[in-house]
Each structure stands twice: as structure tokens, then as C-alpha cells.
Image (spheres, rainbow, N blue to C red):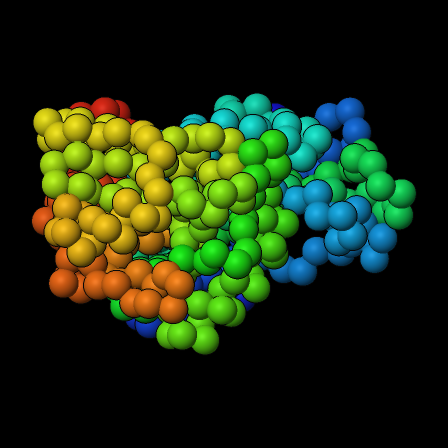
Length: 355
Ligand SMILES: *Cc1c(COP(=O)(O)O)cnc(C)c1O
């Protein structure tokens, strides 16, 4: 596939943030983006061009019926080198999301190659400071102008880049999680396992409930019984009960996280038992009072590993690990960050170098 390149003149390029750790997540973008269009038959017009507004018909299907998907991944700097973490998994998942939303696939090699070309050009935007990275947002939207409800025949795919520090303003310190028993995120057979834009629109209202009591993130329960934990806003969840570490199974209503998969592998490497099993909110609440629940943490590309310091459930606040970061949580964070930044050994060949 040939990529046309239209560069911003050197003296018109943006100034990079002086301290990326102070930049709110996802608010600054690099000079260039990648895009291509699907005309109903095939992908065409692959281009790297200046970052900027896109033009859409007000009747574009994505705006009315939400046919839109995205991915989230990061590039890390190691000296002169730029590293990606399991990028082919993101592009495979992108196609799974596309299938669910009746959108065209992009060959994993094509997606990866175009990302590499963009990153080579924008490598100065991959920040150096520990804890920082260049966040990558591949996106696909339905662009056909049409008010009839049916799959679009035209699509736009694009990739934008944003230098970021830690996802939570607290950095690597315990986050507070609000268990929603009023709203649900996804049901089996729905779109919960796809990274589909509408899932996040549907989650916002529960977030406002959480904010009212001073909590930032929502933990979702299953839609039918409102009993089994599913996942957090943008993270999968793990609970350590004494020496068993458990996470909900991929039942179809939760997002199959790449960080989740990596954490399961690392826990096995440590010689601990990692189980994918149903976990009820009651088991967690009981375990918190008996001391059986030793640690809870979330995991996802944006936050990497986020220790949970407290839970809010049915008007009661519960403290987790005395509000501190547990030892397994810390170890997983250090190992994952170490592997992603190229500082630690990479026994599972997760790292792909941009070249
Ligand atoms: C992206 C996402 C995750 C985490 O997936 P990773 O591949 O680890 O980044 C978890 N849950 C939801 C709802 C997500 O959107």
C-alpha cells in the first residue's frame, strides 16, 4: 500500500509540551496524522498529513447511529528507540470490534505498517520522562451521508497521537471506585466486548453518580443479576483473595484487555494461581471485612495498573488494602512498565520496535 505524505513545514510545527507530566490526558496532539477511506469496496487514499479538523456531512451515519470504533495503545521511548507493546493484538481486536459493528476490516499488516510510518515521522513526539508515552488512537467512523438505519458504505480510518503522562492525576496511587447498581454497561449479546464508541456514551451517566460522592471510576456489575463484577470504565479488574488472583471471564460483555491478558501471563510466571472466574460483589465485600481480599487493581493501556484504595457500594465506603498499594499490584506495575519501556527483559516477545 502506498502512503502519500504531506508534511507540515519544519518552522510551522507545534512546540512540544515542556513538561508532559502536567498535560491533562489526551489534550495535546502531534503534528501529523494518518488517514484512509473505504469506498464500500476497498481502502484507498492512504495519507500522512497535518493533524487537523476533518470534514463530514452532517448526515454522516456515525453521528446519528454511532457506527464508530477505536483502539488505544502506546509508544514508549528507550533512548533513541521507540517501542510498541503487543500492537498486533490491538489491530486484531480492532477487526473484532469492526465485525461487531458491521464495519470493514483492515489487514493487521496494513494497520501496523501505516502506524510505523507515522511513528517514524513523529518519533520526536514520544516523550522521554519516566511514566510518559505517546498515546495512539486508531479510529474508524461511518461517513456515508444517509439517514436510513443501515451499515454505512463509506468509512474513514485515522490515527492520531497524543503525548501523555500518567492517566490518573493521582499517578500510581490508589483510586476510588464506585460500584454502580443502578445503571449497567453491557449485556451478553450486546456490544460490550467491542471497543465501540457508544459503549462510553452509555457509561457517562453512572460516572456522574460516582462524582457526586467523590469517586472517579465506575465498577460495573452484570446486567441481569447486578451481582457479578464485570470491569471498570477503561480497565479490567483483578481481585487477590489470599493467594488466589481472580478476574472475571471474557463472557462477551467485557472488553478483552491486552493488559489483562499480559497480567494473567505474569501472574502465572510468578507461580501464583490466576483464575478467570465469576466474582460476586458480595464475595468482595465479605472478603474486605474478613481480610481475605488482600488487593484489588484495575489494568488497561491508559493507566497500566491502578491500585484500588476504596470501593463505594450501596451508600457505604469500604477501604481496600488500608488504602495503600498492595505488593502484587506494585510488582505487576513495575514489571509491566519495565517491559514496556525496554528496561526489563521481555520473555514473551511482547515488544515491537519501530523501525
Ligand atoms: C480499552 C479498555 C480496556 C483495557 O484494554 P487494554 O487492551 O488493556 O488497554 C478495558 N475495558 C474497557 C471498557 C476498555 O475500553
